[in-house]
Length: 616
Image (cartoon, rainbow, N blue to C red; front, side):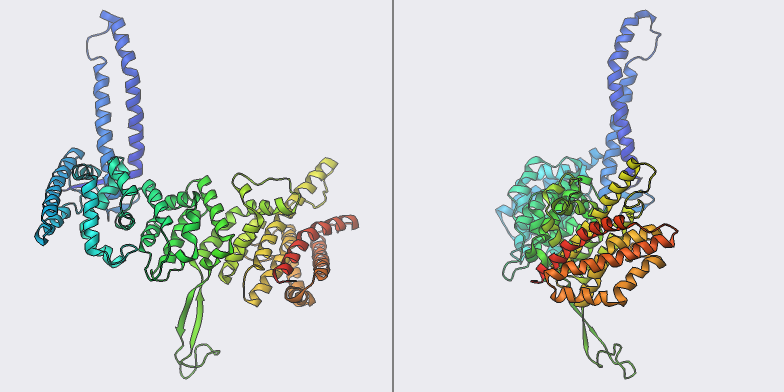
């Protein structure tokens, strides 16, 4: 008879932990109380003694085990109602003992049907196997039931049934297609869920786990992931094996990798751990895996998995960092760039509207081609800003004298890989907006205009501290702009977008300083405030824009130095104008020369890199 159960799993687990602690204290106290009673002798008053603690311990242990069983089960039951953390469901069994007994009996019936089928593989005997397997529907989410079922069946029978179902339903050499797995789910679904629920509870037979990871055919391993929500540990271990076998081959779709990625899209912690170790990131993100168009929605599933693993605050800090470093290294190799290209273009039909086309550039009946942004590139561009400070240090280590050394993990990353990573992202113009926004936030956090660039404190020590702080921030701002600018010229962008973003990058370091003095730096704009906007006007309304454009198209090394002079002089003028508007005196000649040297050093290397990228 079904039992209605309502549990808050998070609260229940906290209570289980508290009961564990209480039971341990009971065990610790028991011998001390017994010894004290014995020592007291006749002075101990009549009545219960240390045996009371035995009863308390039994109660705690029994209650803890029952609550653990209920919590594990309700967490796995599909379609449980949830409100405010409380989950409700109907349980098939009243307690874990009843559930395990029922699972054992079901296992015996299934084993008998399977043995009969092995002796006589007739249609009738196979139908009896199917009938026995069907008994587990709706029950194998219960880890106690599943433990009895799997222990009785054994690893050999489990693998044999998977092989038999595979022979009847699998038409694809590279794994079950969604249609074929849907057919197989009726038979294999209960077994896959039993495997998952016992693994999560820690009661999965070791020989069965070893067989699933070592001897089970790859397609059956992938089916386990596609049929049930497996544990993080199993998903990572199976994922490592499946990643090694991934990739499109001839005319066969790689459905095994599809089921892996679909499982990862629901488990960010497993994705994070998988990407952080070995060659998994390289294997899963290479173009022949990502761009296999025969699997609908694959890129979106992969993007969802990356989103859960790489978003700020996701999972374990060190694993997220290591996963990101590996992803950057993958796209630091230009051979992986095709994985980040926009999706195959979407065609939009423009029918005549009252005799006029909806877009005047197209005639009635024309077709317009619109590239769809890469979902993978969008995730990476949106979340990489959390590591902008570290990436700026990676650049500065190779190009500047910034005293800060890269943190743990980042020492193994070089500036060229980071430049190529941004280049890969920027091949898709849709990456511009999130990167620009992230850079604005990075500059805002730097608060570049907070300190006087050369110090105005009352003591020399205070002024020196201000100068050091300003220089450190200026180097970091310029370093990240350099990474973007260099990446931009590794990419293939539309000329107009390229030019616009290049101008913004060249002006950002000092623009941020001007915006800092004004106190209105915005994350989604180059500058903010009336004074700051004058620098943008300078870039777009006079010959400076033309100079930059001409330089990027056909500049020479000599012109790089000339252009840097023009840029820095113009921005220094804007900087002094900003100070004056806030009632502060302009910088002296010596201070201006030093400031010019600082920003000259920020800009010239990336301009020369742009020339090299364009063959100058």
